[in-house]
Amino acid sequence: MSSRHDTGWDRIYHRYPSKCLPWELGQPRGVLVELLDSGRVVPCKTLDLCCGAGTNPVYLAKQGFDVTALDISDKAVKYTKEKVRKAGVEMNLLVGDFVNLPFRREEFDFTFDFGCFHHVEANNRTAFIKGVCRVLKPQGTYSLVCFSYKNGPAWNHFTKEQIFELFEDYFEIERIKHISSLEADQITRYFYEVLMKRLVDQRS
Ligand SMILES: C[S@@+](CC[C@H](N)C(=O)[O-])C[C@H]1O[C@@H](n2cnc3c(N)ncnc32)[C@H](O)[C@@H]1O
Image (cartoon, rainbow, N blue to C red; front, side, top):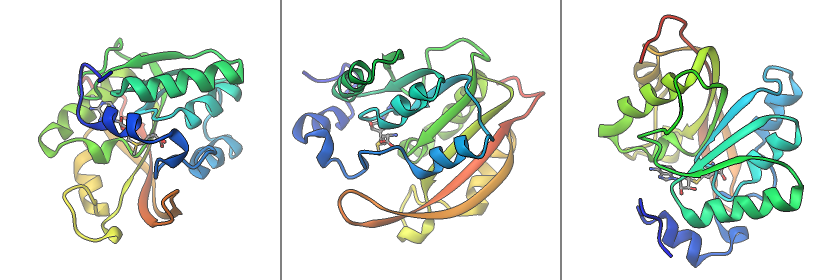
């Protein structure tokens, strides 16, 4: 069955078992583990944007976070639901579109986004950023991991300057650094890891 918002992602999830997805490492992302280990983010009301097959949000829930996870693919959400069941944790799971986040203003303390923002079409980027800003509390934390220009030129491979230009009206960028990752398809990809805080006087 296809998602009612089908963008092609559901077909990918139906075609491949979750362990064959290039982005599914079968373990939580190192950036997330480091964030928690450092104490920079502590258990709180959390949104995992584009949860995929659920490895990251289930890790967060196991660490005591109150997690809401959203993805556009029904099948991805089903994979996540299965992991949630096996882990014996609780999670609010939704099929939905990142451009129209179905949450109340200032509902979350922390938003985790691994590989989500770089899939937002260029003409929707501002709406997406305003949406993330709207659902985060003032000073709430947004951890973004997106493709970097180091992967070669493409519409969604960002430079540091582009990231500042897109986000600085809404967030204070506390940290931005390059990371690389050997993905499950054995290709090394380059990302910017960006840690930001929602500006207090932002009323998106
Ligand atoms: C590269 S995967 C990353 C998944 C997950 N964050 C992870 O690290 O394993 C991108 C995800 O974005 C989801 N996605 C794409 N477009 C979306 C949209 N418009 N709204 C919500 N999710 C979307 C896809 O279904 C897919 O699960």
